[in-house]
Length: 261
Length: 277
Image (tube, rainbow over the protein chains, first blue to last red):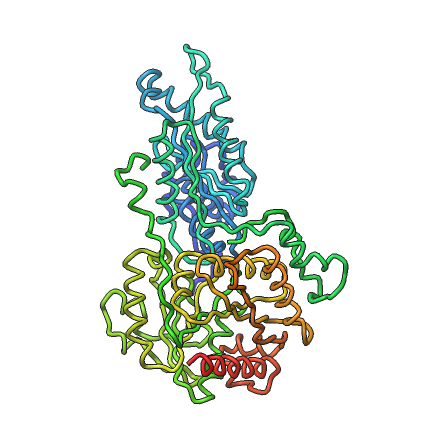
């Protein structure tokens, strides 16, 4: 077995790296070290750079469909076991064909880039914003409480509507998006396909009901009120009958109106 | 994809109407995952088998089955093959180490994570074929209150809710109980409190849950909800050891405090069945 530590087994000039180099050279985000340095280091940088490129959408710089699928699969596995809610939003720019027809494809590209920028600025670092394809985007929000999902989606819709997009020679234009969302099924193993399908159904409804709106898949929810919780284990805070030892209390469980589903 | 032709209604499964529960069928469920539901099912089955009963555990956790992991069994034929018509029901039933039978869901059950009329029919067909052959059928359901879980529980005459003393587990158990009372009009719900720190903790928890139910959940007059405390399973290093070794605790460490608690649970379940019949 060849040792991966032995750089001398690979001579850089024996490899056909031209395509990879030119691909990476065109991308400002990837910096390759000097080829005259360590061959191992150089190769690693090429590989890292190619991986980076293969996960991104070149136009918007967002995560692409390939990486989105990986994120969805991982999120589904996490939710299946932890039960922590995760929300998937599917967004589609309203009347995008008209944008293209009016301002040309360059105008359309500017709109896609602007939307990507707004979406990225609307979410937390842990969230994933992806270009799903065409004028459709997807956002994965792990640990997103059912109470806040609608508010977040609405904030995104509003932000897109508010932001002026500069089209050279035309001036600022405004566009809108329709948003459909669905929570990952909790406690069951499911598939990314099913999850996307449920969010897409809501997106379809949002379009159908007149666009520029948010619709979320409503799943069965049982609310346990703060009063009920207080009675369930409120006395824990007082330190008597201590069922629970060793500090296993979960502060989040005391938040008012936690959805337990 | 936004302009798909499917009407949204096509993708919504029909809600289940609670059926007449089958006698001898006991559902083991929990609000939260990871509280020891499958561990309780498997070891309770072994303890019931020890009492001379013919026991079947049906892996009704269709989406996230891990009974196979707990029992260290990897059958060639699973419930999935029966559902898809690739195998006969009797070929999918295997003998578990504890002297009971199991029907494992197996992987590939992702499509059963939603209750469609097909899943419902498959499940009913299989259940009605199985029940006559056993003294007791344990349904190891999934966690939470998805329609599949509620459907599986609706088939059982008795339901055991497993919870741990952690607030998140208690909250989820309470929510599950609310649904079982509201939708399935259950009057008796059996409680198993797992991983208790001290003797009596579990009973105190059940009493507390009962008080909250009495205060916040209204039922039809004359039909109060009663939580029946079945047992505490004490926090016991033997449990972890058995799980890590992938052995049934009832077999490998029958004298451990947790195993003794499960023996007691089996006795109570058996007695309640005798009373009911």
